[in-house]
Amino acid sequence: MTNSDFYSNGDLKDKPADQKNGAQKTLLTIKGSSAKVEGKLKISNSVEVDCEVVGELDVGGELVIQRSGNVTANIKTNNVVIKGEYKGNMEAAGNVQIMETGKTSGNIKTDSLIIEKGGIFSGNVERITEN
Image: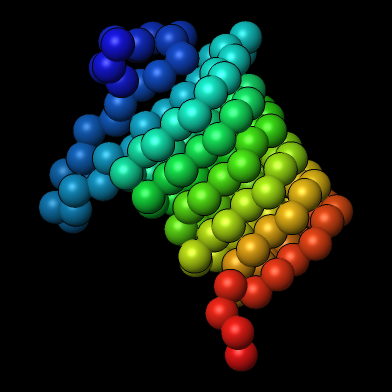
């Protein structure tokens, strides 16, 4: 089963590269009003989640949890934008941004945590670099 096997109202949809600026950014979108994904996902590019995901995520690019996204997982990634709900342990080499609609609980290991007004965070934060 490949990412391109799922389309309209489907659970997985592979978006084409950005043609406007010539950048080769592939963004995998996992969405669906009743979709639920369980297990280990290892993705070298960016991911947008707009459904329920349970398990482990290893994302090479940026992870975006949309407003209707609900993620319960251990995550290793570069950057994260949380607009929905997240529970688990996370390690992010870049930025972790909890938006005004975001709710996060768990442990975060990062050097950059941004919580917008209205965003909720419950847990512990640890720096990746020692300084």
